[in-house]
Amino acid sequence: MKVGVIGTGYVGLVTGACLARVGHRVRCMDNDTAKVERLQRGMMPIYEPGLEELVRQGVGEGLLEFTDALAAVVEHAEVLFITVGTPSRPDGSPDLSAVRAVARSIGQHLDGRYRVIVNKSTVPVGSGNWVRMLVEDGARKTVPTLTDGGSPGVQAGEPDFNVVSNPEFLREGSAVWDTFHPDRIVIGAESGRAEQVMRELYRHWVSPDEPGREPVPLVVTDLASAEMIKYAANAFLATKISFINEIANICERVGADVSRVAQAIGLDKRIGHQFLNAGAGWGGSCFPKDVSALVSTGQEYGYECALLKATLSVNDTQRKRIIEKLQRELRILKGRTIAIWGLAFKPHTDDIRSAPALEVANQLLNLGCRVVAHDPVVTAAQAHTQVPDLQIADSALGALDQADALVVMTEWPEYPALDLGEVGRRLRGRVIIDGRNCLKREMVQELGLVYVGIGR
Ligand code: NAD
Image (cartoon, rainbow, N blue to C red; front, side, top):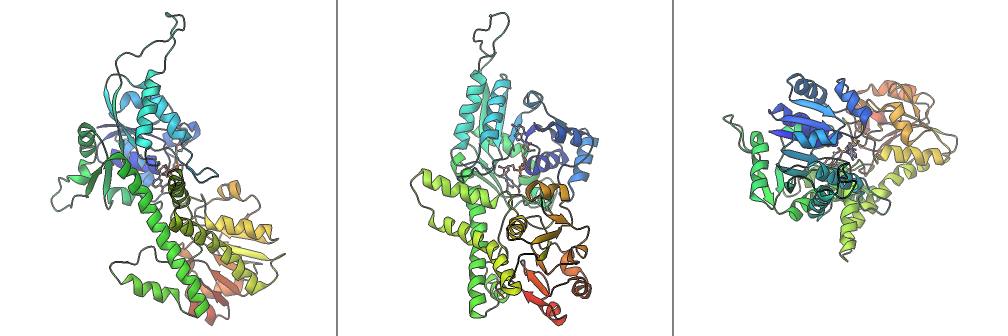
């Protein structure tokens, strides 16, 4: 099928490359021309395992191409994905200006041919209707011509399209794997025709030809339910982490070990082990904005989301607890050098949007510390867009020289694999705050270092 993807970020680029991999002809568009030029030269704008190879393959087979012209994508595609960003506004509601701009422009470029417009960006309930209205408005938008002296003209043929919601559940760091192996595909459609197009688009997943390959469950709902499924899933996962962080905070007070508690409660199949790691709290481009957006939707309808507000508040406090732990161990923070391991909001990604590490770094700088950080993939240039005064070390061990304490903020697997003896020798101070409970506590203590974890 001919597919267009508008917004070539983490979601759009991965979606486009994976759809090309299964044989669709995909044209990806972005209004960031520098990004498009880099993609056209085979350079990846993001770090995502397996993506570069997939893109190279798609381009090589002539199934994947990049453009900055929206008209070229609308002209090409039977199915048009909207995958632009929907970041939080200061009041917590999502900023839908990119979705609005794209929907209107799609309308302006539609001709009489039928299209399915797919909202893959995470958008509040009701956005399917709203996008339909914007596309219609765009299509009606008059195009002044020379022959009619600039008076309103009417486009040839009525636009023929349906809007579908197809929320995305991929995780950064394993986005390619997740796209090929999703737990489910959700389609919110109010037209049988659009549903059929989406079934055909996802045939590789939902009706696999290969013997022995299990079909991925396809959940078809109305538009509003599909939109809510995305928010509910993220709100649940964020709440699960805030829950275990709250338990961790009580564990610390009563002398219990949250790692043992999580391990045991996770054995209960109704609970499960995933998302039960206590730590410095969640971040990233999705959980904070999606939980805030759901709270904001509740408010719009006069409903107070008490549980979700608590989820946010526990998460806020959790980052502050890293500073409290440092204050307890070092007393004076002013003039101290603190090493931070890990800047990305989680391992295997270079995404630093709402990363807890950067918030902690900022707080430490404000308190008068020098902060030296290391991350295996986040570059100094990236980090400095958010925290200009952060010093970046070339290696994890290099960050420790002169440091009075080490704080582990992202559980990159290379950190626990480092020689702890060398860590002990390089670190000037004696304190390690393990904000992700990923180091071996006993081994750290055997070296005469002070180990401070979360909830243990
Ligand atoms: P992103 O910021 O990485 O990418 C968005 C892209 O859209 C950027 O390249 C930007 O240049 C482009 N863009 C913005 N305005 C545009 C316009 N008018 N025309 C064309 N392109 C435009 O964002 P992302 O992380 O890929 O997220 C996209 C959406 O998917 C968001 O709604 C997000 O909540 C949702 N989502 C993200 C993830 C994730 O892990 N990143 C997972 C699931 C869902």
